[in-house]
Length: 93
Image 1 (cartoon, rainbow, N blue to C red):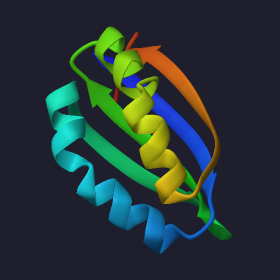
Image 2: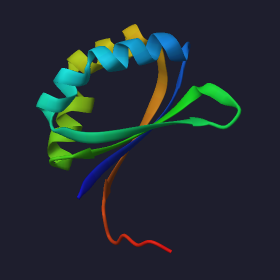
Image 3: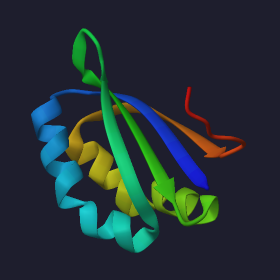
Image 4: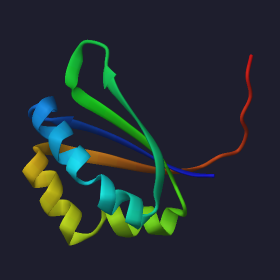
């Protein structure tokens, strides 16, 4: 399994969410399989986007594309941090 963890602050969550939802089709075409959105407990404008991808190469190509840079600007994203991950283990306690 291939995952991407993105941590970023946005100017306005509702504006960001609208742009995020509008990009669902291009995210799927790029290889995103599923996602979770989380927020910092006390700040809805600090977002964590955790997603599963078909490959880390597909994810990198998407997140580093000029098109996505423009989408991030439109969405009011401030300095995103991208962490590319591979699953080692999973369990339930």
